[in-house]
Length: 304
Image (cartoon, rainbow, N blue to C red):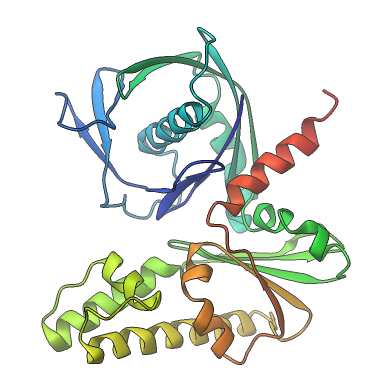
């Protein structure tokens, strides 16, 4: 069974299931709730409090446990599996700028674990990860729109994620890893700036869902002054991000720009209003990277 998982700093995404926050609660006793995962004598439940940013997600077992949640949900999406041992082909990804330095470690993190037994929602699973392949984020998302982009000689892909904003150049449908970087300027940075500003000026504590609601045009429940501040700070954030790209000789007004990632979807209005982007495409599927990993894995292994 081929399963693709996108390990975002904000959310975990798979191809067929609803994204969930990259947060975990761990307990030695079974907590209340239905979506409980038991692994190695510990109980885990998902939390809306995401794990603090980790440049290297292999430092501990938390992102592996989050992967088990994703795998279990994908198995359930296909009405379970009758096999006693479920053989998994796992497709994952890394930010383009971290790819060269981290992909071997990331592959090793998921490989060589032998038979993995866990319980989810009261169902027992025994999985064996037969194969793991890793691909560059951003490029993977663009692959889902490759038919539309293949005719352009130069395409700049910008993936605004949780903690990083990644960019990557694609030439004639192939990724050019000599022109890529990961800026620590993702949507979480904006959240923190807004929360600090609103607390300082209005003594109001917002969470990330509040900010999302305003940016999605659902801010009727909030003070107009606070909503206006949020929208203004979001526009400043986008403008500053594009200025940072310009300093790196990346001109979004030249050629074609493709925007992917949850941050790009959330900030679409601000991106379009910036006046700094020429011809652009938006990949509006939040799970586009995961879908791209799946497509790239299938293309790489066809005929094997």
